[in-house]
Length: 295
Length: 240
Image (cartoon, rainbow over all chains, first blue to last red; front, top):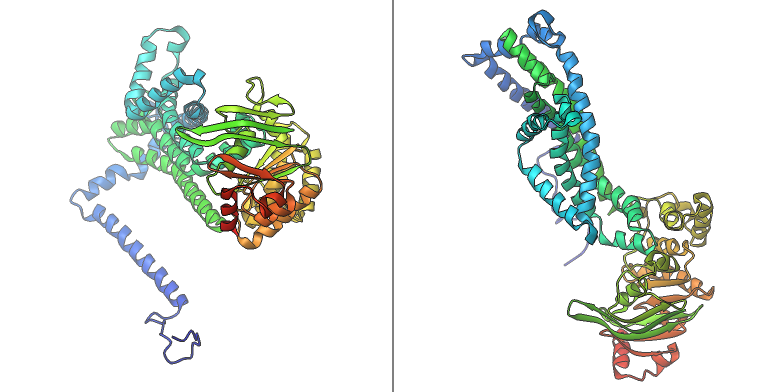
């Protein structure tokens, strides 16, 4: 068989299908995606209009007047302002995230260590992660928030419910995050460890300078994922009577007989988490393209 | 300087080294040859204390490494090990790879180490790549950086574990040239290699290992032109 690659040769197969130029395909693609988006969104909105209870639904959840009242608060009616209570959520998740990173890392470190001295701690920590990954956060919130004050341990038992909420969030999420970090540490090739040790680096320096920087890079997406989840779960602390934003929305809903305050609270969570999920996706994509470029 | 005496190493039931004895003097280059799985890499790892030995002794500067008071990190500063798969740190630039050991293991000043590192890179012609990440370099360049990373620790002895085995054939030459250069400037080296011509040129002693046993040891002339053992002769015939 001839290896001639001359394109003009009559027996060269034709690779041009019925599609026209790439540019045209691109434009047509854009048009197709715009139309399908409009249709999909339109269909969802349409349901809110054609459903028998559509008007009631729209009035109950999308009443901008009541949404405004919930946002600003109304002291004589006992409605706490969403605009103020949101700071409770913000400080709760900021503090929890810092604590979770610290404890998560410590737990991961203990679990991957082989030192005989740490054996009892290692066992304890394994039981801890098993328990707190398995028990629903809501129950942990109740146990900590109602249980610790019942112990009557002076200072420890006299904290505000929000503090107990942070403790509960930290307990549960440290268990999750430690597993994520442990997986990251284990994903660093063994050769990296050998190379660092053969340079005379101590185990601690090896971890700090070689293993962790590589581990954290791989686990940033799942880590941010857990943090997005943690931010939402600050709403669960409301069961301890903390007026955080979801609770404030609930109060406005039962006072005004209108759920628009809840929707406003939902919008607040979206405003927080959407940038974070976008960032996560961006990091995953960047990491992927970097790896592809590297190979 | 380095002396191995009847070294035995087992992984579970598998005896990888069965009583190896070997001596290495200052400024001497010794090549370990033998098929894959003959124990060459394990021997190097034992000398670097990355693996513990089950019997026998390894002595460095007259001090037995089995002594529990020996600090492995101090030993490793004197004995550098270069790996088959380079094992450069992908998250650090070429320069930072070289600087890491001296700065964090030897606690030397970064500025001073940096100058030395750049001089070393100059020597291998990669000074202009100092700020790039290892994955931007070719395999041969990466391996030369890995060798230079070990040299930055100013080791008394350099262990090289089949450093050209993972390389594209066209890139082997540049790495071997660097090693020849080091040998001629008097660097003490223990080299596990499959490159017979290189071993012939560069070494003062060649040792042939087969299934964890040191079958034969001698000058390159002795080993390559008149091997005393049948196993050595067969091995050399196969690799030629």
